[in-house]
Length: 306
Image (cartoon, rainbow, N blue to C red):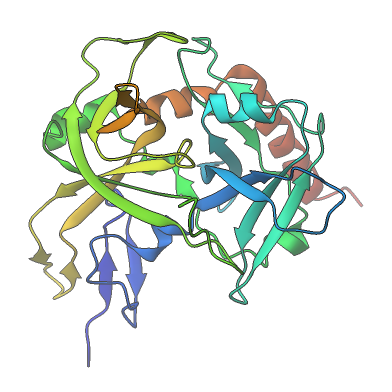
């Protein structure tokens, strides 16, 4: 009888399988790509055509502090992507379980983007609560990135994460996005510089970012960036194989550097840290909304007096 497989690749969060999934030996689990969504606009909204997908977003979730097995999903992208969508109708394409995709239209002014409470444009992070009807949500083939996967300062120190560690991103490849569903491209690189001091941006000011040696491009803004932390594979006391890679969310791609009049990509992208996303999710207004939803849920489930 084959042993069960314990998959700990996603930030050491345990995932058990009686039958190993096809990607069990891959460095990058398929679940990571399933967090990615494409964001687009139409030049003419009256024409029945596919949107022009010009940006990337990804779904994250935070566990309820009061209710087991309940979490709150959010769509995350770069703040400058959200700024470009201001005042426009835009579209979000998410893959579905039938191997296709569903496209959501978000009308101009229908939702509010939330930004980091501690900084202005220097923190290139934008999120909004993902309010989708449950019957549609159940058809989506997605995997939210849990906040447990967010790389923290403590884990950086404990795991010895720094320059040279492998990173990867998944997002829109503008030249081949997928005809019937999202086909995220995966690009690999490594950490080139830790955020020991702010990077000066001519438009946004001092930015706290990682520098990664990875050739970013148009469309990848807002894409999640993960760091691969190699650990020794092992057989547990019960004879279960434990995987040898831990994957943490490093942050999201903001942009890259170019040089010369030909604007040659120098191959260095800059990444807003995951902790900036978490600060945004935990800003007081959003925490209060989650608290109200939890209170309503608990009230609905409470017994009544006869």
